[in-house]
Amino acid sequence: HKGTLVSVGGKLYGMTSHGGENGQGVLFEYEPIANTYIRKFSFSGEYGYHPFGSLALANGKLYGTTGYGGANGMGTLFEYDPATSTC
Image 1: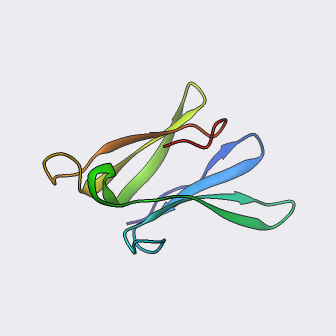
Image 2: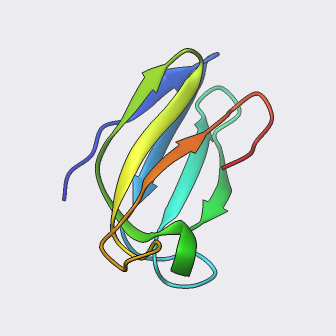
Image 3: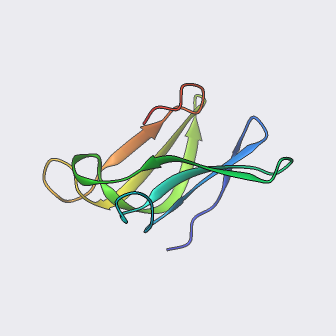
C-alpha cells in the first residue's frame, strides 16, 4: 500500500507495513536537513499491526489505521503525538 509522508515541524512522518522490532510495521520520522531516520513506534498485537493507507494530521497529532490487531483482531485506528513521541 502506498502512503504519503506528513510534514510536522520540518520533519516528515510515514509508515511501513512491515519491518520494525516485531516485523509488523513502523511509524517513522525523517529529518531531511540532518538526513536522519528515527523509528518512533513498532506496531504489534493489541495496538494493531501492518499499518496501511496514509497518515492524517489534525490538531498537531497524526492518525492512521492498521489492517490487523486490536481488541477484535480486525485492525485499529491509532493516534501519534509528535510533541510527546507517544502512540
